[in-house]
Image (cartoon, rainbow over all chains, first blue to last red; front, top):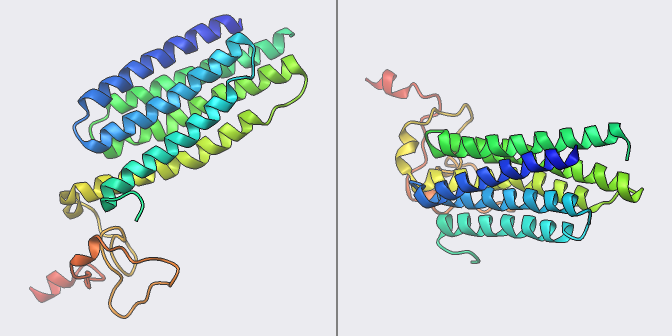
Length: 89
Length: 152
């Protein structure tokens, strides 16, 4: 049963990633693109975790944790650059 | 692995995938950025939370002990998603200054703190830096919002 659930969820996350890519390409404003990139990283975390369930290994959780941290840092740095004109003052 | 735990894990995986898809659909379908922020910051975070719960249950079932890494990822995502959404909204408000005229007036002593300075005579705490971007305009002294009608 888990195999079918994983198949459904892989398809859903793949469609979500394609949709996010469309928003990243055609976003009207700069902040739309930043938001689409952030959402793509969150979806990538989900797909890494589902892949770990499928392969029955806990090896990929560290990469998911690293991606979560770096997506937060990069989004905050981007917004700070837009707000203040500099990342570190 | 018995049937009940497998059913529970499958339900969590399906709910997670469905919420991720709904969040990304909201990112595409909604009209402007302030509406679009709702999809990724709420629905996608809930979807990733569902996937992480499924993973935690699965490896609890397989290995026999509860692992902490999923809880770390969940905690980190649930802490950072509102901060990210707040930052993006604030940057959007500052790059589109015409939104300022459409905003309703807040009910405090002074206006939107991302746009305006503190009123005259009010000191900010020493630990908080006053905003330097918005402070080139004069702080709004119209506290109640009905001053124009009384003057005219």
